[in-house]
Image (cartoon, rainbow, N blue to C red; front, top):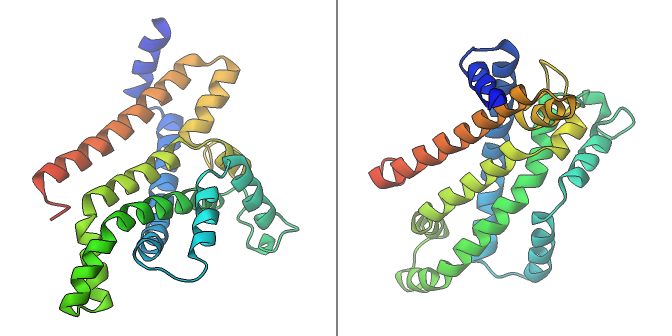
Length: 229
Protein backbone atom coordinates (compact mmCIF):
# COMPACT_ATOMS: atom_id res chain seq x y z
CA UNK A 1 0.00 0.00 0.00
CA UNK A 2 2.87 2.35 0.80
CA UNK A 3 4.42 1.62 -2.59
CA UNK A 4 1.12 2.46 -4.30
CA UNK A 5 0.81 5.79 -2.44
CA UNK A 6 4.39 6.68 -3.38
CA UNK A 7 3.62 5.79 -6.98
CA UNK A 8 0.69 8.21 -7.02
CA UNK A 9 2.90 10.93 -5.53
CA UNK A 10 5.43 10.40 -8.31
CA UNK A 11 2.73 10.56 -10.96
CA UNK A 12 1.63 14.03 -9.82
CA UNK A 13 5.08 15.34 -8.87
CA UNK A 14 6.12 16.06 -12.47
CA UNK A 15 9.34 14.11 -11.91
CA UNK A 16 11.77 15.00 -14.73
CA UNK A 17 12.92 11.46 -15.39
CA UNK A 18 9.40 10.07 -15.28
CA UNK A 19 7.99 12.51 -17.81
CA UNK A 20 11.02 12.25 -20.08
CA UNK A 21 10.44 8.49 -20.23
CA UNK A 22 6.79 9.11 -21.08
CA UNK A 23 7.80 11.54 -23.84
CA UNK A 24 10.18 9.03 -25.47
CA UNK A 25 7.54 6.30 -25.18
CA UNK A 26 4.86 8.38 -26.90
CA UNK A 27 7.22 9.56 -29.64
CA UNK A 28 8.32 6.01 -30.38
CA UNK A 29 4.85 4.45 -30.18
CA UNK A 30 2.94 7.07 -32.18
CA UNK A 31 5.60 7.32 -34.90
CA UNK A 32 5.99 3.57 -35.35
CA UNK A 33 2.23 3.03 -35.34
CA UNK A 34 1.70 5.75 -37.95
CA UNK A 35 4.40 4.39 -40.26
CA UNK A 36 3.22 0.80 -39.82
CA UNK A 37 -0.38 1.74 -40.63
CA UNK A 38 0.64 3.78 -43.68
CA UNK A 39 2.49 0.71 -44.95
CA UNK A 40 0.36 -2.10 -43.58
CA UNK A 41 -3.21 -0.98 -44.27
CA UNK A 42 -2.74 -0.39 -48.05
CA UNK A 43 -0.87 -3.70 -48.25
CA UNK A 44 -3.65 -5.45 -46.37
CA UNK A 45 -6.34 -3.89 -48.57
CA UNK A 46 -4.42 -5.02 -51.66
CA UNK A 47 -4.03 -8.58 -50.40
CA UNK A 48 -7.63 -8.76 -49.21
CA UNK A 49 -9.25 -7.43 -52.37
CA UNK A 50 -7.19 -9.01 -55.15
CA UNK A 51 -6.17 -12.48 -56.27
CA UNK A 52 -2.80 -12.97 -57.89
CA UNK A 53 -0.25 -15.68 -58.46
CA UNK A 54 1.73 -16.42 -55.32
CA UNK A 55 -0.80 -14.81 -52.97
CA UNK A 56 -1.22 -17.94 -50.86
CA UNK A 57 2.51 -18.15 -50.19
CA UNK A 58 2.75 -14.43 -49.45
CA UNK A 59 -0.13 -14.69 -46.97
CA UNK A 60 1.59 -17.59 -45.24
CA UNK A 61 4.76 -15.54 -44.90
CA UNK A 62 2.72 -12.57 -43.64
CA UNK A 63 0.91 -14.69 -41.04
CA UNK A 64 4.27 -16.08 -39.89
CA UNK A 65 5.65 -12.55 -39.48
CA UNK A 66 2.58 -11.59 -37.43
CA UNK A 67 3.92 -13.88 -34.73
CA UNK A 68 7.53 -12.77 -35.07
CA UNK A 69 9.22 -12.85 -31.63
CA UNK A 70 10.24 -9.30 -30.61
CA UNK A 71 13.81 -10.32 -29.76
CA UNK A 72 14.22 -11.78 -33.26
CA UNK A 73 13.02 -8.51 -34.81
CA UNK A 74 15.33 -6.62 -32.48
CA UNK A 75 18.27 -8.85 -33.39
CA UNK A 76 17.61 -8.34 -37.12
CA UNK A 77 17.55 -4.54 -36.74
CA UNK A 78 20.57 -4.64 -34.41
CA UNK A 79 22.65 -6.50 -36.99
CA UNK A 80 21.38 -4.21 -39.73
CA UNK A 81 22.36 -1.04 -37.85
CA UNK A 82 25.49 -2.27 -36.07
CA UNK A 83 28.85 -0.81 -37.01
CA UNK A 84 29.67 -3.82 -39.20
CA UNK A 85 26.15 -3.99 -40.64
CA UNK A 86 24.97 -2.70 -44.04
CA UNK A 87 23.46 0.43 -42.47
CA UNK A 88 26.09 0.94 -39.79
CA UNK A 89 27.30 4.16 -41.37
CA UNK A 90 24.00 5.81 -40.41
CA UNK A 91 24.89 5.40 -36.71
CA UNK A 92 21.28 4.80 -35.70
CA UNK A 93 21.91 2.03 -33.18
CA UNK A 94 20.91 2.95 -29.61
CA UNK A 95 18.69 5.80 -30.79
CA UNK A 96 14.94 6.34 -30.78
CA UNK A 97 15.01 6.01 -34.57
CA UNK A 98 16.40 2.46 -34.24
CA UNK A 99 13.60 1.63 -31.82
CA UNK A 100 11.02 2.96 -34.28
CA UNK A 101 12.49 0.80 -37.06
CA UNK A 102 12.31 -2.30 -34.84
CA UNK A 103 8.72 -1.48 -33.92
CA UNK A 104 7.77 -1.09 -37.58
CA UNK A 105 9.28 -4.50 -38.37
CA UNK A 106 7.04 -5.98 -35.67
CA UNK A 107 3.83 -4.01 -36.22
CA UNK A 108 3.56 -3.70 -40.02
CA UNK A 109 2.90 -7.44 -40.60
CA UNK A 110 0.26 -7.41 -37.84
CA UNK A 111 -1.52 -4.40 -39.35
CA UNK A 112 -1.28 -5.84 -42.87
CA UNK A 113 -2.51 -9.29 -41.83
CA UNK A 114 -5.48 -7.99 -39.84
CA UNK A 115 -6.41 -5.51 -42.58
CA UNK A 116 -6.27 -8.26 -45.18
CA UNK A 117 -8.60 -10.48 -43.16
CA UNK A 118 -11.07 -7.64 -42.57
CA UNK A 119 -11.15 -6.45 -46.18
CA UNK A 120 -11.19 -10.02 -47.52
CA UNK A 121 -14.49 -10.68 -45.72
CA UNK A 122 -16.31 -7.78 -47.41
CA UNK A 123 -14.44 -7.46 -50.71
CA UNK A 124 -16.19 -10.18 -52.79
CA UNK A 125 -19.69 -8.70 -52.51
CA UNK A 126 -18.45 -5.15 -52.99
CA UNK A 127 -16.28 -6.07 -55.98
CA UNK A 128 -19.22 -7.82 -57.63
CA UNK A 129 -21.37 -4.71 -57.33
CA UNK A 130 -18.51 -2.46 -58.45
CA UNK A 131 -17.97 -4.59 -61.52
CA UNK A 132 -21.59 -4.15 -62.54
CA UNK A 133 -21.34 -0.39 -62.06
CA UNK A 134 -18.00 -0.21 -63.94
CA UNK A 135 -16.30 1.65 -61.10
CA UNK A 136 -12.61 2.56 -61.29
CA UNK A 137 -10.01 0.80 -59.15
CA UNK A 138 -9.44 4.00 -57.17
CA UNK A 139 -13.15 4.29 -56.38
CA UNK A 140 -13.29 0.64 -55.34
CA UNK A 141 -10.39 1.12 -52.93
CA UNK A 142 -12.14 4.14 -51.39
CA UNK A 143 -15.33 2.10 -50.98
CA UNK A 144 -13.41 -0.74 -49.34
CA UNK A 145 -11.84 1.66 -46.85
CA UNK A 146 -15.19 3.33 -46.15
CA UNK A 147 -16.93 -0.02 -45.70
CA UNK A 148 -14.35 -1.22 -43.18
CA UNK A 149 -13.42 2.06 -41.50
CA UNK A 150 -14.58 1.11 -37.99
CA UNK A 151 -12.77 -2.22 -37.92
CA UNK A 152 -9.66 -0.67 -39.45
CA UNK A 153 -9.56 1.79 -36.55
CA UNK A 154 -9.42 -1.25 -34.28
CA UNK A 155 -6.43 -2.45 -36.30
CA UNK A 156 -4.69 0.87 -35.65
CA UNK A 157 -5.39 0.53 -31.92
CA UNK A 158 -4.00 -3.01 -31.99
CA UNK A 159 -0.82 -1.69 -33.60
CA UNK A 160 -0.52 1.06 -31.01
CA UNK A 161 -1.08 -1.40 -28.18
CA UNK A 162 1.74 -3.57 -29.49
CA UNK A 163 4.01 -0.54 -29.88
CA UNK A 164 3.52 0.91 -26.42
CA UNK A 165 3.84 -2.47 -24.65
CA UNK A 166 6.97 -3.74 -26.41
CA UNK A 167 10.08 -4.56 -24.34
CA UNK A 168 12.46 -6.98 -26.04
CA UNK A 169 13.13 -5.36 -29.41
CA UNK A 170 13.34 -1.78 -28.14
CA UNK A 171 15.64 -2.78 -25.29
CA UNK A 172 17.98 -4.56 -27.71
CA UNK A 173 18.31 -1.77 -30.28
CA UNK A 174 17.75 1.16 -27.93
CA UNK A 175 19.96 0.09 -25.05
CA UNK A 176 17.58 1.49 -22.38
CA UNK A 177 19.76 4.60 -21.99
CA UNK A 178 18.58 7.11 -19.41
CA UNK A 179 17.29 10.42 -20.84
CA UNK A 180 17.75 9.04 -24.36
CA UNK A 181 16.14 5.71 -25.23
CA UNK A 182 14.52 4.60 -21.98
CA UNK A 183 10.78 3.93 -22.42
CA UNK A 184 8.09 2.97 -19.96
CA UNK A 185 8.26 -0.80 -20.43
CA UNK A 186 12.04 -1.04 -20.23
CA UNK A 187 12.06 1.33 -17.25
CA UNK A 188 9.49 -0.81 -15.43
CA UNK A 189 11.65 -3.88 -15.97
CA UNK A 190 14.80 -2.07 -14.82
CA UNK A 191 13.27 -0.47 -11.73
CA UNK A 192 11.63 -3.75 -10.68
CA UNK A 193 14.98 -5.53 -10.90
CA UNK A 194 16.51 -2.74 -8.78
CA UNK A 195 13.75 -3.09 -6.18
CA UNK A 196 12.47 0.44 -6.86
CA UNK A 197 8.85 -0.67 -6.90
CA UNK A 198 7.36 2.80 -6.36
CA UNK A 199 8.79 4.13 -9.61
CA UNK A 200 7.85 0.93 -11.47
CA UNK A 201 4.26 1.08 -10.19
CA UNK A 202 4.02 4.77 -11.14
CA UNK A 203 5.08 3.94 -14.69
CA UNK A 204 2.65 1.02 -14.79
CA UNK A 205 -0.23 3.26 -13.70
CA UNK A 206 0.62 5.83 -16.35
CA UNK A 207 0.99 3.17 -19.03
CA UNK A 208 -2.50 1.87 -18.30
CA UNK A 209 -3.85 5.43 -18.10
CA UNK A 210 -2.43 6.36 -21.51
CA UNK A 211 -3.91 3.22 -23.09
CA UNK A 212 -7.28 3.95 -21.48
CA UNK A 213 -7.34 7.58 -22.62
CA UNK A 214 -6.52 6.69 -26.23
CA UNK A 215 -9.11 3.90 -26.35
CA UNK A 216 -11.73 6.12 -24.71
CA UNK A 217 -11.03 8.93 -27.17
CA UNK A 218 -11.42 6.58 -30.13
CA UNK A 219 -14.65 5.15 -28.67
CA UNK A 220 -15.99 8.69 -28.18
CA UNK A 221 -15.23 9.65 -31.78
CA UNK A 222 -16.81 6.42 -33.00
CA UNK A 223 -20.08 7.36 -31.30
CA UNK A 224 -19.80 10.97 -32.33
CA UNK A 225 -18.91 10.05 -35.91
CA UNK A 226 -16.39 12.88 -36.18
CA UNK A 227 -13.44 10.72 -37.19
CA UNK A 228 -15.25 7.94 -38.98
CA UNK A 229 -17.76 9.94 -40.98
